[in-house]
Length: 159
Image (cartoon, rainbow, N blue to C red; front, side, top):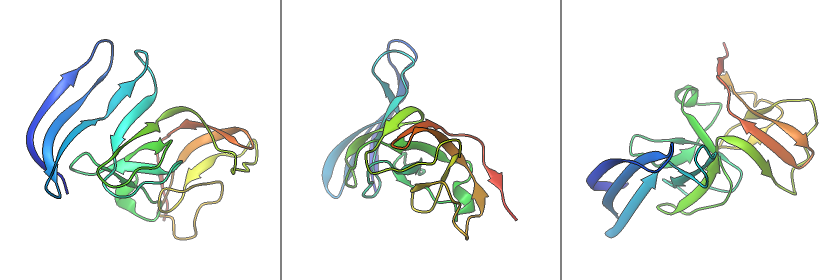
């Protein structure tokens, strides 16, 4: 867990903003910049810091320290916390890119067109809700069998 030593709110040119935290993690100095928009003003690529090993194309929430962790449909506490989809893998403490709105392509995907994609368990996107899901969250729609338009919606709590 990141032990903060200094924290500040930053606003970059344009609409970009985020938190700068200097701290220590396992005895190492960590500079955390999360979340910040990357690219042109109004862009949709975010920069996160992994609180655990995060795989590519997985959905995450930010914990109370601002670190990304896998979101799961079987954990009701994640219903209103889903932050973004990772676009690359990262080990704990390392930064990674993520998308909240925009296209993500993955050659191993085989989406069915005209069907929404939901948050599954352990950050996995799926077109079939897990049987133990406590909420339903549409996270996007396929634009081809290997490309997803990520657009995280509002959760629907299940009984």
